[in-house]
Amino acid sequence: MFFCKRFSIVCAVGVVALIAGVPVQAASTPATTSTAAIAVLPTGAVLAAISSAPMTVDDAVKLALQLNETVKRAQLDITIAEDQIASAKSAALPSVNAELLTGINDLGIDMRGRGVTFNQVGNNLMIIASKPIWPPELWRAPRAAAEAGLGSSKASLNRTRQQLAYQVRLGCSQYFSAEQMLNVAKANVTVATEQLKLAKSRVAAGTAAKIDEYQAEANLSSAEISLNTTTNNLSLARAALAVQIGLPASTYIQVIPEEKWPLLPANEDKLTQFALEHRPDVKSLMFTRDQINAGIDQLEVQKRPTVALASTFSSTFANLGNSRNIFGIGFDVKYNVYNGGKLNATIDSTRLQRDQLDSSISQVKLGVGLEVRQAYLNLQSALEQQKTADKQVTAATESARIAKIRYDAGEGIYLEKQQADLNKLQADTNLVNARYQAQIARAQLYQALGVINPAEEGL
Image 1 (cartoon, rainbow, N blue to C red):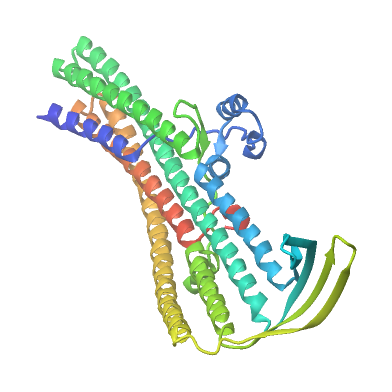
Image 2 (cartoon, rainbow, N blue to C red):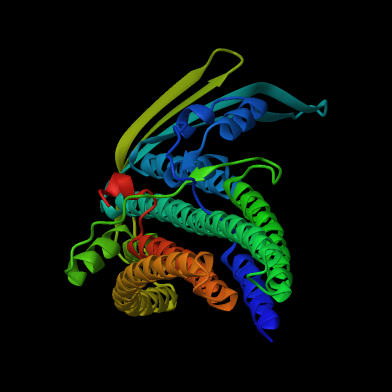
């Protein structure tokens, strides 16, 4: 019965390793490499540089932002939007059109019956220049719409970057968890190996029953199976993280866990205000509202007279040398007298769309406040759970030490020592899970705040 209990707990550790995703960091902190320098190297050199030195989590995020194709496409959208602004600015500039008409200038008929005669071929050159001067919305509204479009494209890029950063942080958390679980599994194998040696010596000395040796062998076998499982989990987590960054799955990468936790004010209102200023989804809605307002302004212009300064130059000349030049300057005034009410209906419909968007913006802002509050409280709770798990590991370690001393001295039974080791193993596993949950909670808080690189925001 005891053997079955032991085997089930060890298998549970393997399942935890599968769920957690992968082990954690080494005790010492190795030198880091700069992803800014890596990005400009050829592909082979990039892989070699990444494999040679560990990265921080922020380095992994920066590298992913440089390599991700979705981010690159979003950056191209910004370039397109900038070109549209340049096009919109031209609405305030003068326009010049030139037209040359060539054809028969005089057509005559010979009255003596000798047929049609062409007296001469004429040319007419016309140049028309025009510049809008009133109302200003004629050129301001298109430019405002284009600028709002650029802002929306930038918000979309930030949203893509933020989501990618969040996914990479989750991948790093799974990598750390798997690495930590691998350390636990290795420690479990070491303990089980020592247990087997001790059990064999005591059985040989006649101070313990043979069942102690059988149980120790079963424990070591289970620990080795768990070690193999967690090793595979680490490889899978490393491959998954490499793909999230934008590297081949076979790339060997190492990531150093973050030591610095966000120093956040206890005032949740300040956190919410920070999120409203940084969240790309909120900014995107505001830019969409600006675009709608610019569209309304463009429609309103159609209800008012438009005035443009116009000048014309016309030159008529023939192949016989005769020519005539005409120059004129004045105002071109246009007014839409009647369109069947279609324009007013379109304006009213656009205003209703703006009202709907205002309602959506208010709802999103409320949701952001709730999301920030929940993420902040989840992080605080996760940190407290991690502290508790640390204390449980300390207690379990001490209990396992005392149980070993008692068993070595012949005062305790093997069952007591084995149970203490199992409690230590479970406490270590709980600590790994607590750390993983804390890392996830931190990544979720960064996402709720709209943060891509916490160091740049002072977090």
